[in-house]
Image 1 (cartoon, rainbow, N blue to C red):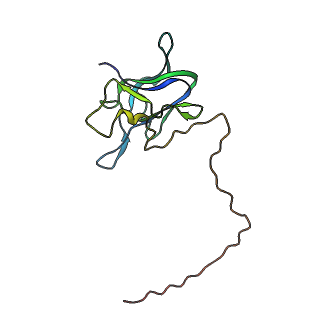
Image 2: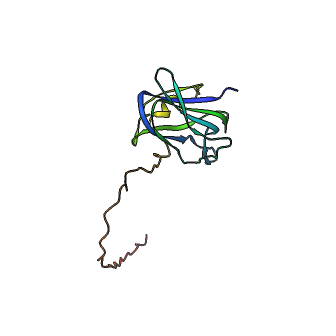
Image 3: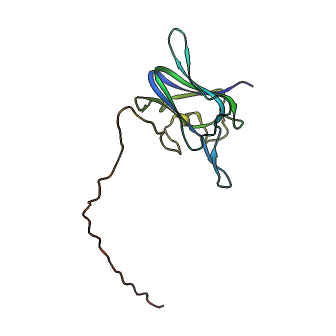
Length: 178
């Protein structure tokens, strides 16, 4: 059988430094949650343009890649020019290839947002799965977590004052009989 593949075409050649694959996620009729279509054996390639198309494998899962569960797979990359990012599945966990989202990062910015998606084949009978949904920025899992070289702590509320005096409040409540 021919390998199944999907790719995000970034439009212009762009310097990228990371890729995140977000698993498809399903809630079954019995309310069980599971990944949906994540491959068992796959490679991720960065394709650049020039006089000749150049492909660089940035990740090779090897056989029997473990189910990532709810966690996006982060692929660090040396900064490199990319025109497309392609995932090719040699072995599927189900009889199809599926992801919730593909993120391609350039300095912390998702340059795959709204990218054109091409695939070897596409499920057309189901409105919930479309090529455009692979790069629409929506995922049930949230954004992938990445360590940045710059120090970024995120949000934190202000600290509570340390000289607080405890207060006890007694509430009396009488219930009226009906």
